[in-house]
Image (cartoon, rainbow, N blue to C red; front, side, top):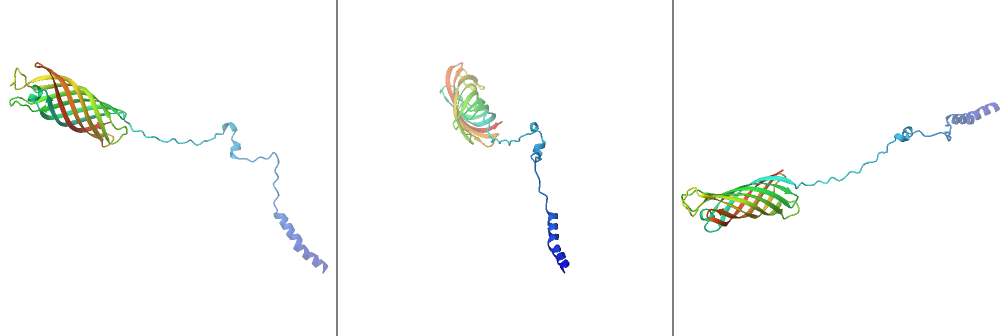
Length: 233
C-alpha cells in the first residue's frame, strides 16, 4: 500500500515538473561585444548616401509680349485741305494698307505700313487719282494688362505720293500729273485678340503732308477709317 501511494505521488508531481522544465526557453545572454547587425551597418560610412527630398519649385507661366506681327487693312479715306490742289480732283475713296510690326512688352510697338488709296475726281475725262503712303509709327497701348481688347494711340512720319492730279497748266490732261509729300500721321485704334496668333484691328488715322509740285507747295490732309486682321507669332 505504501509503495502504491509513492508511485501515485510521483506521477502527479514529478512528471509535470519535468515536462515544464523541458519546454522552458533558455534566456538570451548578451555580452558587451554583441552588436545588432543592420543593412546600414554593413555599408561603410564613406559610401553611405543620405537622400534629401528636393523641394519642388513653383512653375510660373509668363506670357510672351515681344512678338512680330503682319496684317492687312481695308477701309474708307477722304482728302481735304487746300481748295486748289488735291481735293480739286480727288475726294472720297477706298484704301488698302499692309502693315508689319514688332511688339515690345505690353505698352509699345513699332510699325511700318504701306497704303494705297483710290479716289474719284471732278474731271470727267480724267483717270481716278491714286494716293500712296509709306509710314513708320510708334504705337502706345493704353492698358498695362494683357487683355483681349487693347486700345492704342499712334504717332509717326510718312512719305506720300499722288498721281492723277490736275495742274493749272494742263487742267484737262487725261492721265493727270503727280505730286510728292512728307508729313506726319496720328491715329487711335484697338486690337481685339482672338487667340495667340489671330487678332482683329480697327483704327482711325489722320495723315497730313506738305506736298510739292510744279504749282508750288501746299499742305494736304487725308483721314482714313479701316478694319483688318493681324497675324502674330
